[in-house]
Image (cartoon, rainbow, N blue to C red; front, side, top):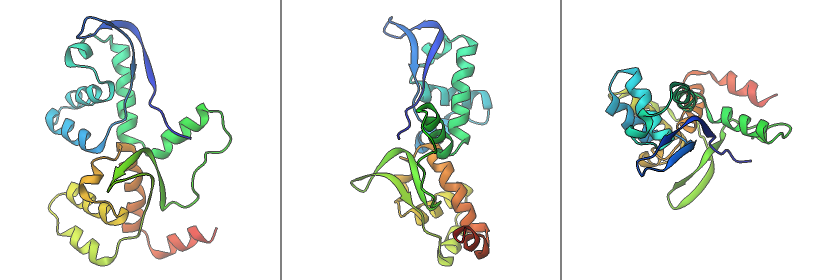
Length: 199
């Protein structure tokens, strides 16, 4: 099963930059690096942040986006919000429900993370990532980094075996899914993992 971004059918068509009519928008996944750049461009204003992310998710220019009727923009903003806050499992469950399949084909092992979109890193295409618990030496090194973003990227690279530049190629839901499990690694006692494996 694979996830395909939804298509949004516009309530009111808009005029493209090339003067053609746009009646629907094939939405795109948000990627970690592009999201970071868009949020940096937007600054602290939440409306500006959503507008920048809506440009990414829709592929529309500023001129095209400004023509949208408010309900169409709200639909795209809701998609952006889900992409920015929900883990991969949310989207894969939606895809499974849309295909009307029975149970979601998901690995029972939480350390085998299925990716929303394949990741091309180190010359190979990956659809899953294997997570390793961090060693104490890595968490000590992580704590010496200046920002929360640097610490998160460092420990994510350590736990996934990816290089830092490879993290930029993850979708935002993949990043979110990884952070949930890595947070367990950093903050839960051994008993949490032992009880999870004994079920």
